[in-house]
Image (cartoon, rainbow, N blue to C red):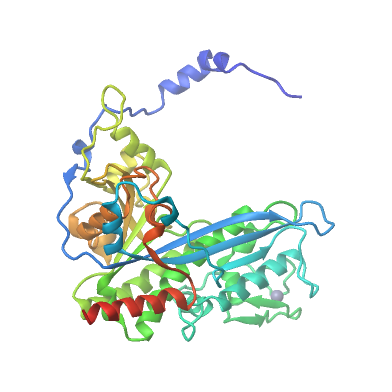
Length: 447
Ligand SMILES: [Zn+2]
């Protein structure tokens, strides 16, 4: 029994009207950002621009399969590293009309592409869909690595798992587990539950992504969480591989760009603390070698922060262009809660999910960017203030955004891969990117 109510009638309703009167409203022009924490400023000059950019590029899509069961699907996930040469980008951006045949997207099949079983799909060895999903998630991490002779994503994951404190609320994935408290037994790789049923467990069960898996409907959330985890593991894996090969000095000439926020959402959110601690550890070593912090930038394409930026950019006549190109806004927690994410919480915005903090930047070409830099210490993560030095390598990050965001695609923010595919000199996860990078760096040294 559906009752249809005209929207106009709802808006006229006295109940709705009196409710809205009690709601807090902030409208553009009510208060300029400068009055509560985010002061627009000219972007500072870069100090040390990198030569190469490694960008992480992931996507995921559910694919229906015909196996005789209704609604059967698999999840296809692709995560790759793209190596960009900033000098080549500078050359390209001087070309007014790029030759369309130059704009060829390099496609490769690499270990960074994999499939996860979805609902009504099971692997042949008799595992049900849910267990097939858990098995495959563990399995794919063993196959992906930045260097052929380097550690796998699973090894990287184990290093991060070691930071995780034990948590009694972690449940065994088998509902009928015979352990008295039903808690998840922590382990490495593939092992068995110590209860009398002794069924297979995987270290990746601690990610809890299988809790988003549904045996009866599409599991898009589980594919998305998997992609998110693999993207972040690849970044850490790449850095750890460089460290293990004793090439930390090369990190002085490489920047990392992340298509998406420096955060981990959903079931595996605990991973953000571990990633933050591992990045901090590696950054401390990089600083002793290069004298500088790592340059890592996350770029957010959509969401509340972007909407807020669009509104800030509106002139009183409601046309875009209020913010001058080359303008930066450093955001405090107070500003975020007051203007972007309504909250009275004492805890800082995003403290359970973010391993970095946000700024708004309008590039010199006029593109609006919601960017992030990582936390490498407690000072960086203290969002009650927003000083320049709380954003590691901020001036270099902005100059990097200026050079990779093409003026030809001002608001198609992710420049990184689409707009500058001509500047990509390697793409993939396996040996391609790392080997090519080393070759380019050596060639540079000899010049
Ligand atoms: Zn058990």
